Amino acid sequence: MLSCVHPNLFVLFKKLFGVAPPPGDSEADMYNNLSPQWPFVRQRHPAEVQGANHKVRAERITIEGDILSYSEEEEEERVGVYIGEMPISPDHNYFEIEILDMGAQGAICIGLCSAKYPLHKLPGWAVDSVGYHADDGKLYKAWPRGTVFGPRCGGGDRMGCGVKYEQLSPGSDPSSVPVFFTKNGKEIGVVMVHVARGGLFPCVGLAAAGDAVRIVPQLIWPPDEDTHMSVDSMEEEWLRLHDIRLNGQMLEYCGRGKSLLDVGLAQARVPLNTTCHYFEMEIVDPGRSGYITIGLTKKEYPKYRHPGWNRGSIAYHADDGRVFTGKSIGSLFGPRCHKGDIMGCGIIFPRDYVCNYDSEGGSMEEESPEPLECDDLLEHFLHYQQPAVPALSPLYPNRHHRHHHHHHHNHIFTTDSEDDEDEEEEEEDEEDSLEPSRRQHLGGKVQVFFTRNGQMIGRREVELPRGGFFPSISMGSINERVRVNLRPLTG
Figure 1 (cartoon, rainbow, N blue to C red):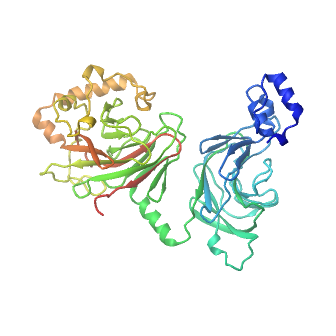
Figure 2: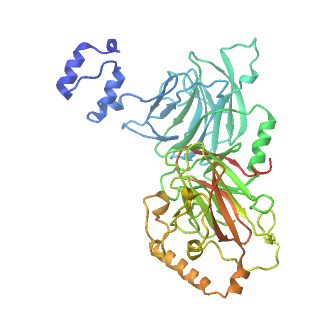
Figure 3: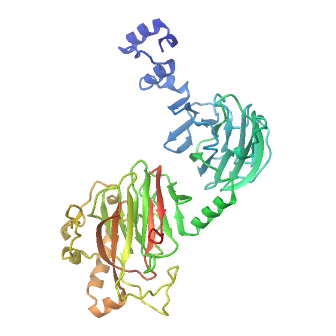
């Protein structure tokens, strides 16, 4: 609004920079517009991100998606504070942070505060605020002296804070609410807190270089035991969750998403079998890059590799529509998948197939050689009958193109050397030289198929590893979320 700016400033800005600020810009907007030429001006004002009701307020905090890290911009050592854009409400009464890194002090804290809380004081140090501190496990409430409250927290721990609105009765004092804190999903304690004008906002404090957390805002804390039991039962469905957080049926990526090693892998506890041979996932949020995959892996699959990249795996990748069959180079297969799409994967077992592993992938035979895994079946693919849908028919590259690198996150590697590829090729040549009877004894072949929104995309014939194929999902960029149904055909 023009009333916010002195008229003489327009003349000054035009003389200095050749342009005047657009009508309607606030003083803060003018300062921010100057930041490329005058960075010191920006440092004197808090970082602000437009929200639905308010703006995110932060000082000495670098915001990269959902990752908050300490950023010291001045010589004077001061704490960094982040205040969310939406106040805590009955619809979203809870939020969490996950500690990614801790600096020398480890003074990371979580709490609630007023909309205008000072950005140089940790949560709980001043009026209209409360905070639970990771370094000493103490509770701070409107005073920079804490009281013993709960356990200390370290790297990998999740700290949560929320309000128990269900405990408020119609005749209770609306100016105070019960605020609770959690560690790794377990409630620690409750304290009554005064509600400032405008409400209580999520607040995170970082004290030193190296402090970094992931914030998960606008959650709902389950008030009853039935919901807890539902979450616990879902956790039992998974054998491994690496850099992936489980939220009901939702899998959420919680890695750093900055390199090829930042893979989040979720592997189901039970391999697919003739009774349960298909599973699905819905892309709820493709995140920054949509590095989401669905597929099958052997039990001992490396946690930092997307399914399909290594032997003993096969996967359909959402970001480029390629299928990867145990190699770092994928082949064109189907359409790319986006938000709202449902991707499925299953196995067509032979009619005479006999399961030789138990419910957790353990062998039911006394001794059995390691079967051949997902190797180069290129010759078979070239003669394979294509799916009925012509538009989605797989395309197969020639053998001399197998080392061609595409501009895709899955095709540029820093961990696999050329020597490793040569060793794999030597192993493949050895396996190709095996007698037919020996190959048949080493492992049985199955058809692995993929779907998109209920339509068959295509299938591949691969060797079934000893112990079976485990449903696996991976992600690789921030804010990615999928909803999983491991048994969609059982009703």
